[in-house]
Length: 472
Image (cartoon, rainbow, N blue to C red):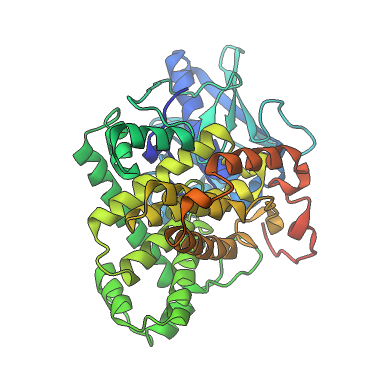
């Protein structure tokens, strides 16, 4: 089995959805690359995009149409100034053209060139899409892509579109393999991960990249707590991190994120206050996510607030929690995420919200336990406990927007992760009756049994509650 880097799971992304925004955006980029490789990009006069299954049913709420336009404009979601996206989309619609290369514009009509196939799904995966290019000599070229969660894109045969298979020296495709390799080499979990990550980069580079991710997390939270107003999409959801942060810090403003963090650290640390801060951290990230902001996909965008909230909680309120602990947290969390990616799913369209919030909570619980010095058995137990109490969670976003109940669910996932870690750290793991592999298998069985209407289609659960949406 192909190995996955922890940074395949935890990475810089853009909101509001890894499967419905980042995946289609990347697929559009890849289709342009396909046309270029065929030597036909310069001959394209028109491109039609058809969205199927969950991408069609909740695509507008998740910004899939916007992602396709940006991807076909050859924009990169890792580098684009997110504040310019709305203006770029407006220009495309008003001009009736889209630049697929620096000096090559083709005609574009939103209604004609992005098609939402509401009544049809492609048979490989619910998040399917097809790009069709029409050339100036009448030739037609097409490709189908599938967004399988976390920003990952594959072709119909299940192969990654960029083929670079890597197998680590000590493969860890399930929890038992992690435990066996740790025992064999007399390593803790984060040490084993650092060793395996050398298949992609040096140990120092892995640590450096983890700290880069941490900087992105800090800045994302900071942006979120100092933005107020209404989230886009028509549900008229008010940003709450701003008001809660303002209340707890008595309206103080800061010139830099580190000044803000220092003040949070020096404030009250009673249970109620700390719990409020955990909620603020999660809200801040997911409100940024809902606004097409730059966030950390971990393992998805809908669940992007859990790991940042738990990590920021530890940094602010756990004594002696520094860069070494941050690295341990992130790489351990990422490794747990790879197990779900390989053995189950991180796509809500396949498994419901247990595949997003459940997985992120499990990842965060393991990361926190490792960073706090837990035994390897306790780390895996913490991951198991967190997922155990998310099994069966539906994905039922109102209006197809990653807002209700998605934003608050990140708060709950963060608190559950901290609780799971606390339980595991105070437990004799040898007495546990369940293990992480059991729970991952159960999660996948639950996903397969779950009714489709609870899998990111906005056709069941809370999404059925009548809510007035002014625009979408």
